[in-house]
Image (cartoon, rainbow, N blue to C red; front, side):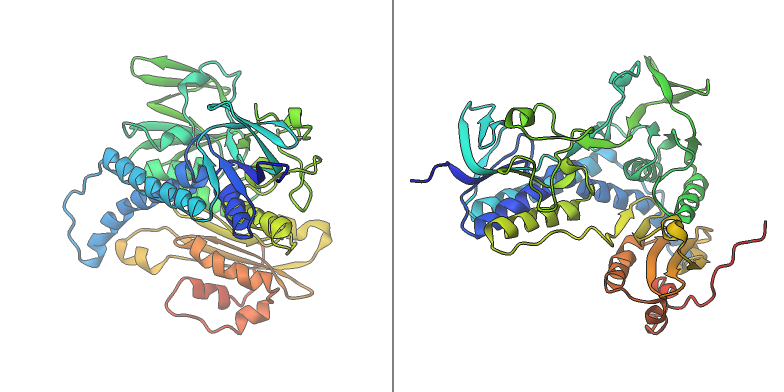
Length: 457
């Protein structure tokens, strides 16, 4: 008779937790998994997937507008927000079923309730009151949106969690924040017809991205009618008969039907019992783990956003897979966090992989910059002036391509393939010797020949 009820107990059925549970079970481990909300986690239920569906919906405005330039006649297209929300809900419900089905097919035991640690090898199920023992426990509870609890009127705002299920499309919405989520929702609501204001406390949106991408997207968003306010924050929010009024530090006010906060996310570890199990956490509440995803308590591991390393769904999936392979599959390996491609699904979108220009210059490294800016073929006949920007960052001595940054249609799709080249340590000469695919936007990556020279001040 085994000493524990399960070999592995996973808390959180998001991307990382489900991958770890599935792979561990495939190796013969007795696995249980608990989820208090819906299976699929933030990405599937109220993150990447529904967001991308809304992005697609918002871009039809351009499609209808551009059609006339190509000879089509589209009569007064009309948009219905409730229909989009219903379609989105149908799709994420389908995906949730797939996640559940996957766990059931591999023989994992599923608990639809909150689980809390009560010791290094025990968890308490909060709804049923059961106590479960496991040889190992994996924390995969993700992250949650930040709110400024001290801000007067904070109870009137929404986060990305609620934005997906609003009953009515807001005519006016102000979004506080300047990261991925903030700029993506600004583009979504703008494309769907809302009057959008983006409010950010910093000097420029998208901190950490290449400066040309930050500046280019800001210009493009403003050209689309998004009001971008920087170096300012809310000091209070009032609810009135006509909506909401946000008071700013600068002394001005903003009227809106909805105010959304997208000011970052924090590891979802509160009231999880980690202290009772002796698990050490960082200043943001993140579970501190080593390269093998193991905490200071040998039986407790963690993967995904709850560790506050790289908060991206594909990273959580690889961490969960690495954990299961290493612990249960006899194939130890660790995740390589270098050369991670990422996209910002704004309109236009950003795709990026590798070092930014400022990162590449750090430490005195000599670099060469290559840039291309052009109007995509699609917008020329449509009569729009939106431009695509591509940028290569190259080590001047080794000729290795250090970074690829794209602002424009399908940037994410292009950068995914560019990531392979960077991972294989391709040089600028390799790019130059690659045959161009014409006509395409991506061909610019292999046809840029002239080094960019900064203008003389």
